[in-house]
Amino acid sequence: MFADYRVPQILQAKGALKYSHDLEEAIMKKTIIPAGSAQEIEIRACTVQAVELVKASLRNHHGMVRFSIQVDWFLWEEGEKKAIANQLPPHHRTITTFY
Image (cartoon, rainbow, N blue to C red; front, side, top):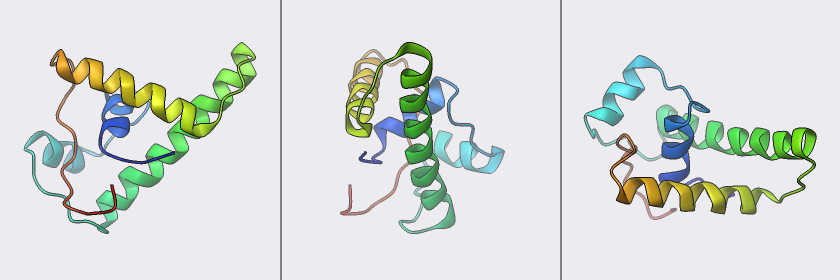
């Protein structure tokens, strides 16, 4: 699982992630969220957890066994398609070399 900017963006758009009012406002205003800040770590950690929950749901409800990276890749591709079609809210902005 690679917690970049696109996966939390699609998870948020699909209702799998819910940001606090302050964080959502910062993202909508395209405010830089500092690397290593509590908000950035929260986005990353919640993204990893959400992917794990999607993976468990696929297994438990649909009998589909997938690796985390497969779920991540699917979500990333869906996010790319929706972004190209302007069907996503803004993603968070963090300046870093880690992703």
